[in-house]
Length: 314
Ligand SMILES: Nc1ncnc2c1ncn2[C@@H]1O[C@H](COP(=O)(O)OP(=O)(O)OP(=O)(O)O)[C@@H](O)[C@H]1O
Ligand SMILES: [Mg+2]
Image (tube, rainbow, N blue to C red; front, side):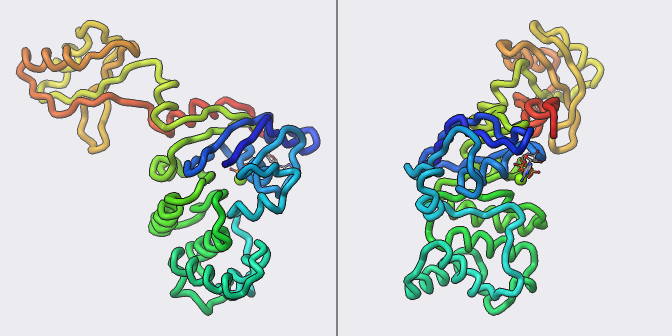
């Protein structure tokens, strides 16, 4: 569906996208993450034929982006960063205008699609308003409606939920979930929970290079070199802590709080050690009921920080 081969973009002396390669199969939803200036927007502009590559190449739906830019644009719905729209245009006119730009010349077909996307994007209540009168959330919905007006197979969305309040984020996220049933999607975001909520796969880019590519579980697994077991036992804290450090294989024990604010301990060991049975036996022997026990994996935030923190930023 989307393929990039050593795709590169240089701006004068700066290499914004540096030989990146990836393939996104039909129906997959990919979250594109990276710190500010990492090269996400530039990559998206290359894929959508808005910018020429300096080296390498890319394909969308089998069309080479450099050789068949029009075919590429027709098969892609693109929501650019900052969602530029004509302020004076009315909602429906905006969609007709974008439809025409996308080569939808038949007015009846366009009318039908405008109706469909108004409904799909929850825009019916703002029909008749000008773009300048819309709230940010509705602007974003209109941008999305414009991106899907020509019913493309591939959607490329550059920070679709940026600047929205939490309710609107959820609404736009729901919309994306509906779209993902039939489309291939690449979306960039700085909201990591969004990726966990909507994406099948994550590509992390840092300083123009791909730093990681896989599912959230794969990324956290590949970076995790320790086993961390969270344990909460009903017993005197000091004694619990001391007893946990005597478990064979335990390298370090330290207090931690789980999401609910209750306090427990993390027992760290090597990646190959599984301390769960030993912890259970200890609890039984000491008669300290186990209130919680879980394996701690690296969160996406931790993965992101590990992969992108010490890279030079431009
Ligand atoms: N037109 C341009 N001319 C020169 N440099 C540019 C241009 N556009 C982008 N850059 C530079 O290319 C690098 C990558 O920028 P890009 O906009 O792709 O990053 P991004 O990952 O989308 O960041 P953000 O999260 O802030 O949107 C940055 O260093 C940026 O300053
Ligand atoms: Mg950007």
